[in-house]
Length: 79
Image 1 (cartoon, rainbow, N blue to C red):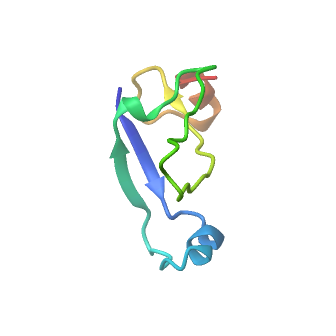
Image 2: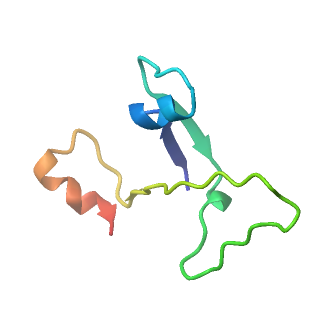
């Protein structure tokens, strides 16, 4: 599985953190171990005092495709 992320694409959040708002999207990857399986608990280690929380949205592309018309895009993702 390949997890491709887009960061700093939300102007208000970047400004809130004091980060510059980039002119082009910040693209980066994460390992598949970054996903928490359904119904598994999220554990915050007792030794940490600095927890930055936010919600991430994940779309899993489940079929190979190229130049997919927007009206057919829903057929290529898992819901």
